[in-house]
Each structure stands twice: as structure tokens, then as C-alpha cells.
Image (cartoon, rainbow, N blue to C red):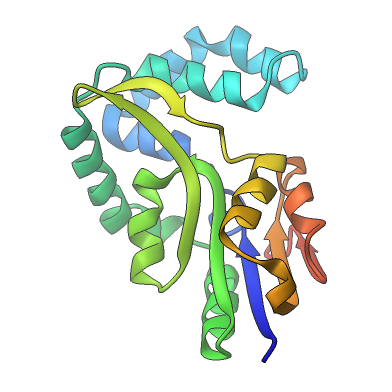
Length: 197
């Protein structure tokens, strides 16, 4: 029997804001976030101008804010973020669409460039499979680097194909909101770009 599957980007599609910045604000405070962004502004401008990659810009942010942070402390704060902050960032329409898919026995998968540390707990609670970027940990501390590849662009497709045999699905739906989601959207029989605005 043919089945259906739905792939969702997380930041900006399910959420109304980029969760990396929200996690930084939650863990470090607003002042530290804004001072850090000011210091990193040349790198962020270079990313906007497409001079450097999404991967490089993200690792600059992670290194500045989280390098040498004890992983257990970081994860505990991520868990608190999931519990107390993340629900207020979820788009109502996106959550309703996810619930509708689940009620119709459609497999729902979040495919995110953000780290799984602040997404996986929410996905598990909502019966969603999570594919996300992994952060590198050495000797119990964050290095500020990404382990493996950033789950962005074509890497989203690579991760999906590594876990799922798409030929087994009669209907493939995909939801995204940026150019980094377009390779994933191209897999779908029904692609939805910026659907919950």
C-alpha cells in the first residue's frame, strides 16, 4: 500500500522567527545577542551578499556564543527553551496542518538547518520525526562547529534520501520558506512555499 509523507522546514515555516537567534537570546540575554551580532556584522553582511556560505556564517555565530560551553548546561537550557519559549514561536496554521497530516496517518518529518538540540524535544512531543544539524562536542563541551554537514539546501535532500525510500510514497508534500528549502521542495508532488504567512 502506498503511503504519504510530509517534510517541513522549521525556522520561518513552522516558527515565526529564526530559532537560533531566539536560543542565543534565551541563553545569553538580549544585550549579549545584540553586541555579538554587532561584532559579527561583517560576517553576516558577507553572508547576505552571498560572499560566504550559510555554513560559515552559522559556525561564526555558534563559535562566538557557545564555544567551550558545557554541553549538559547548554542542553538543559535548550530543554527549558523548548518548554517555555518555543510554543510561543510556533505558527498556529503550521501546527494545525501538521496535526491534520498526523490524523490522516501521514508521516511528518521536520528537516531543519537548526540544531536538533532545541527542536528534537518539540518534535518528539508532537510525534514528528526530526532531521537536523548536529553540533560538535569534544570533551563534554561545544566546539562552536557543526558535526558533519549543515542540514541546508541539497543536504536536506541527502538526509531525506538516506532515511526514506521515496518511491514507497504515493504522495510527498514539502513545506519551506527560503532558497535553502527549494531542493527539498523539488522532491514533492505537492510543494508549498511560504504557506503559513
